[in-house]
Length: 495
Image 1 (cartoon, rainbow, N blue to C red):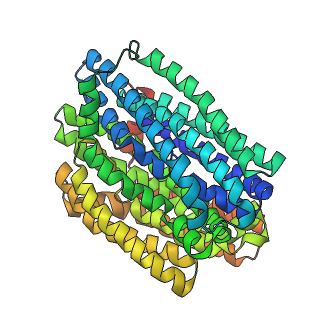
Image 2: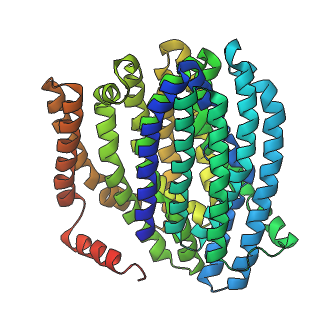
């Protein structure tokens, strides 16, 4: 529960940083350069394509270190930590070399970068490549900390990285209007955070910096194969909308997609924060052979995750137009219908997010893989077809449909892993969440009919909707005894 709280704080802060940085980057760089910067970020090692460069080693190290710590094997924790950092550093250097050579040639051509920006985009690509090494090292440190159940320190490191890196990029964009200066500011600040990350790791795992064992390194790589197969699908899901819009319509269209994606990311940040700590938690529970614990983790975790995520999904979807007008002005209202559709996909996936992380934590990645492949294929085909038929909103309609398709594919795997019954899961997890959602929808609909200005509509609709969700949700989804239990767990996290 404490780890989940820290994860929530990290993702809420990430949402705040993103919302603050988009106006600065958009205003400083202009629409075309901002779109080009967004496309470059799809190759980052945090949420972009080069996050795949660790070939599953980060997730595997979290799982294996968590299991070793649960058994009290401190020596193996040290060896695995050294191996994880060494592998990620090596893979980062190789990935940076590839991006800095091949990417320089292909990126301007594939994404139809305007001729006046081609030179700057090429230089920026090289700088982004240098940042990839630093990001992968930080990712390895975060994976180790999470395996030790120190999600608090991992998320504190992530908060520092997002704040420093995104803040430096935004300031550089505002002051210089140059995409090259923006990339340099981002890379330099990321390397500074890397130094702090390695210091934190030394404090948490003394002695980790000894020469890594070749057997441990190859073991992490070998065990990471299933995760490596799964990870590309997650990156495709995160970047597909931007890439399709960039290839079909060019960088300027990507700016609108990015606005919708950032608001979608706000809801997704809450969803991922409420499911993030499930990987190390399920690894510890699985290592101790506790099937009842896994079942409780899936049932309570999914219900709490939905209760935390759905009110934001409803609010953003229904209030997208006034929210964008307050945030960026009326010039970007074209992004409102994109946002309304985009954020609904997050609400659908909230039913299986915790279960998916649980399967990952206990090593059952193959069961996630096939569901994800079908979902991504559906998303790709529909998005490409619909963007030609109905415009930009088509890429998000494809995402929403693919999320719906994923539920019956992934849900049974979660039930098998936890021993839960489908009828019990629906009645104990999904049904109690519906009354507060319907009540919130009704309240926001009334506020929209009042015809208030953009800011009052967002304020009144957001606050009133949240309040009615909490009031109804406390009655339908949480018992008095469960609330007492939650309070006791937060007061005694070590228990």
